[in-house]
Length: 330
Picture 1 (cartoon, rainbow, N blue to C red):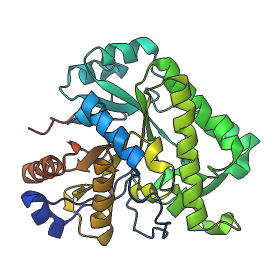
Picture 2: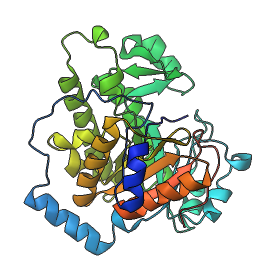
Picture 3: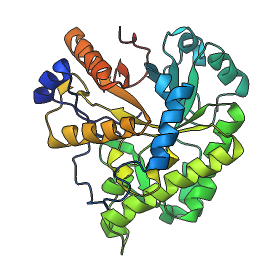
Picture 4: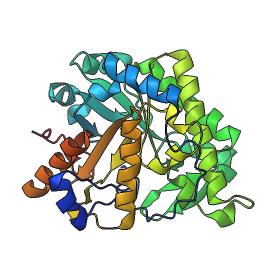
């Protein structure tokens, strides 16, 4: 359902002694980041002040563990998640990843268990089983670009087009707000790297990165204007922090496969260390890092959990299909 990334062997040693590594999420993305401007690389004084206040108030950084389940809800219900001990849950906006959206009373019951609850959906791509796909294909088919090779039911889109906002993104935010979610968990910012440039004449990776930041900032402003304190968490592509406006717009970031890519394979690629550095910078700016790795071997689970503690990330080790609840890091 969602995407995966990589985490590595040489990094494993670092992980166990206090280091940590990370890669993107959504698919196994191989670097290729544009060279963004240095501005925005470090938080300005006002941003540092906001981060310190957030820490003092026990805002997102108070979360130390989380659970990530996008399918396989027993009997279509959230009871098992409510019983789970984690402090935060990321679930799909819809029960069947289709049109059966979770109702306000269901989200309220999950929140009453003491959890913050974030609604998962994509912002740079669309799956062909989502309810918006058919109308989009028929009425605005030019918005849909190349198929994602790693996820054959998914297509990248012209996410900078106003029609994408009007037809897909704004309605999804409105649905999350109506249902009472605490925030949104936004997958596929990495579309800026993966979509086919040949189908977007005049666009560069840098301009696409900037357009993705514009979209994330717009999501944040729109949602927070309607509910102050609403959380915005992109998944992966932490290098976007170097673009102006990005860090101030988000409350945290989801990071897939910092230590292990699906499944149980240590991450050794260079982008693992790059991702870790970016995640640390966002953490130091007062943002909550929700790290998830895909591992089942006990030694790897322990290693990932050690990495989360060392890095002061909220961590979860699960299975690639995100269709069951794994035990929290002890």
